[in-house]
Amino acid sequence: MTAKKDLNELIEKITNDLNIEDVISHYISLEKKGNSFVAICPFHQDSNPSLSISSTKKIFKCFVCNVGGNAITFVQKYKKVNYLEAIKIISEDFNLNWNDYFVKKERQEDPKIKEIKNINLEALNFYKYNLQIEIEKNKKLKDYLNERKFTEKLIEVFNIGWAGSNDGLKKYLLKKNFKEQEILRASLIKNNNGNLRDLFFNRLIFPIFNQFNDVLGFSGRVIDQKSPIKYLNSSQNLLFNKSKIIYNLNNATEEILLKDNVIIVEGFMDVISFYKIGIKNVVASMGTAFNINHIDKLKSFTKNFILSFDNDQAGIQTTIKTYNILKNHNINLSVINFSDGKDIDEIINNNLNINKKYFEDNKISFLDFYYQKVIVKEKLETLTEEKLKEILLIVLSYNDLVKKEIILLKIKEKFGKDFINSFIQNLNFKPLVKKEIIINNKINLKITNINKNKNFSSLNNTLNKYLGKYYQEEFKFLLYSLLSSSFFNNLIFENFIFINKYYKEIFDLFKNNKALLKSNDDKINYLKTLLQKFSSQREENIIKSLLENFQENIKNENLLKTIKNINVEDFISNLHEKWRIINKEKHKKKFIENINANDDEEYNYMINKLKIS
Image (cartoon, rainbow, N blue to C red; front, side, top):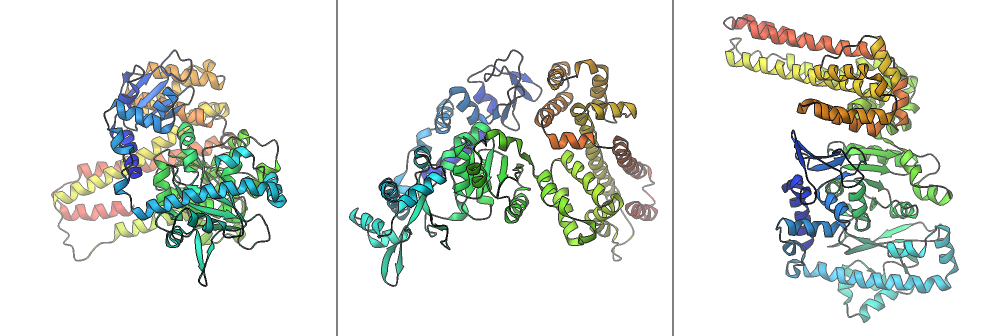
């Protein structure tokens, strides 16, 4: 086990094993409220407790200034220190033996890996020095750097260097007493018909670091656009493995924790372009598909991923593939959607007025991105069954129920409601129905009470599942009521009544206090007032969720426009149909409860009838 891996274990100990409230209470006073804690927020002028600390999720969040994160993030912000210093402070506070994790254990590191690190470090110094010399005499190189707006500061931050054409690196490393075999093992020279030559020549050199600033390898880029091989990477070796590397994680870690999100781009030129406008929570894979190694590494810092790939068809497909990889990993996914150029590098270099706000304004949900880039372009007359299946599987797999419902409504409007409903029914439920109603003829019809209980449990679970989905739909109605006054007024006009008693109570409060809900600020303040009003944990959680969702979506123009165009009458009708299904399940449950347990043959027959119905 290496010292670096040990540090990852320490991070996991802090974020997973320690109680976040214990860490935060070292610095501020906390008040227990239900299953959570609240406090006066130290990150803005606060008078009422607006900082919420979740013991179960191990995160904190201020509902006013929107600062949030984990235990390490809190200490980092509160003490105004960097990431590693925050870890050290927490370790000392909780006797976690910082030195056991952070001090290098040289004896545990593979000597060959240590050797490659040393060679890479010397190579980095060589390449950096070369660039400073070459800039003065190579006009083509100087013009290239100026055109790409590579300032001295950017060159320094990313440790950019230059590889010449005279096998200078091999000669330099041999003078430093490294052996040819060792340099070969580091993938910095290659055997060309018995001659050992530098791997990189006439290329800009970009060193690849891990998050602990070890040089893992290099990537070289030609400045001659006519060259057939634009990028060349170190070959895989004991230290350098492209599938496990995240470019710029060493620079981005602190900013990722600070912002609680990470922007993922295709290449290091895109990373550097973001830095030009002050966006630093950016990383890239090394030209490989996003995989579990990347996910696990980034998830230790944040669960909020933002994809920003090229704006061509290949980039769109990469975005979709990445979503399919991420969707089962509890990641909150957004996409930066732009149409001004092919990629970020091109957009930023060609637009002098581009700034952080441009990218924030163009950040949308993955499902909105997928709708705009894929679904909108499909036509009913040319739509294949395979393509529709692909579209619906992606939409139905999305974990944001509100957004999923919105996009499904658009799809039904575009291709026909009955057609899509029928297709979804076949797609989702047909195999399950077939499986349910198969009767094995070898099984004796005699059924014991155990079987009855099993059937009762199954129907009970089904009922709970339907109820859960129904209440999620009702929550959506509550949220839309806050986001859109027209939706709110239409619900009142249609005399809509919430089934969930908590939602009904909250909506009635909205109706009775319309005068207090004129502006977005009014609504936020009113929700905060309700947090103090309700005593039950259930109601408190509902209000917190409403508040968080409202604050996240008040500037979401796509969502607001969609809500404005919703036919509320159809929306309510759709919900009523779901309630009819729930009542049908209730009827089944009641039948099971009251059926004569002694008449097993009749019971078996009726159960199978119910399953088919």
